[in-house]
Length: 255
Image: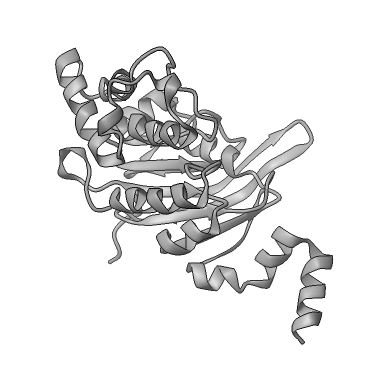
């Protein structure tokens, strides 16, 4: 008998006025995996993350995490249960140090300041920020801020981490340096437990290198799923990204 998935999303929908941002979406994430959700801009990916993490309540459907129905449960309760997300637009506490920023996340598990700061140091080491612990967060580069966003979420000791475009805005070298950091999340974590990762990502290099399974969202609906190699050759995915006209021209040129 297969183990119950860590995250089970069933027939989730959400509309904003007349816009159906997410329509009848179902998928399941197994514990200990690194998977990806991709799709063109405006596909509904971040809205789906908000529905899973509790920042939005679905109009229909359900979300189960670790065997519990968490549909519409507030994000702070989900974070305490082990479900944490990052945000595409990074907003650190600019005047505080990197150490203090990470400690904000650590305080979820460590009420004492000394313990939270110690936990922050350990997390900073994992994400490559150990040398910048005493720097004001506002002085970090874009790449540094992305690592800090990851560190703050990781400091909550999540069982499932939702990464929202953690590689966006990075140059090719920075992406290459970040990929092993993300990969390491599923093999080690604070407290000795690996973290399951579901990532939204536009950088296909990262998706192909990291994800073992990919779901594709377009116009609020799941249109395909499979391994990265299967997704890369799926005609529906190509059309969703490039448009019907461009996809047809490419098929004609290849014929």
